[in-house]
Length: 112
Length: 114
Image 1: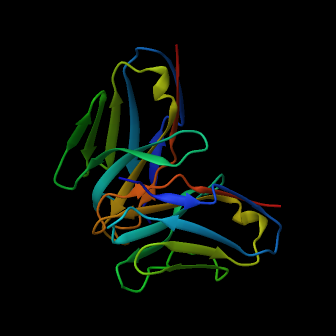
Image 2: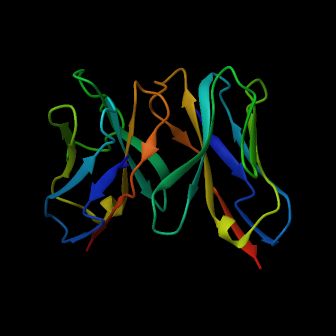
């Protein structure tokens, strides 16, 4: 079956603009995760959704970051008023019942 | 705070060599440990998942072992090939901070030359 998909694959935006990154998890997977991979910080957890429960937002770096998951499937990560330090690869993963995580190809965000 | 370190940071070997990548973690309270491969500009491909009750997993030329008490895991690659060139990441599923929030290692960049 299809794996985790993310769009766009690349995004270049100007400092101060808002961006939306999309993740389509594997069908039937109940858990969805966002991670960020940057040169200085490595790979770090951002946010986690499990079913209809309130998301765990403990990894979001600032209140400019938010995410939602509609209908228990597709998720959108929104970054408001982007800064240059937001430049990174944003990875999405999904899993069945919080077990083994499967990752998408990522979205490379460049803030100029 | 759980910290995961991988040694070496980079490794360059000729084709055919057997090699070992190391992963160490500071807090032994983990559920699972997962090894990933990342090709340049790509996402993560899962290689092996070692569950909490297991000590090793094998897939083809790959073998991963886990010793939770000592905070170590090794990934053994037999008869390396140029196609194995990639960055290898280990990640732990920590018990104390929410096992869903993977904590990743620093990565080992492997180059296998023909």
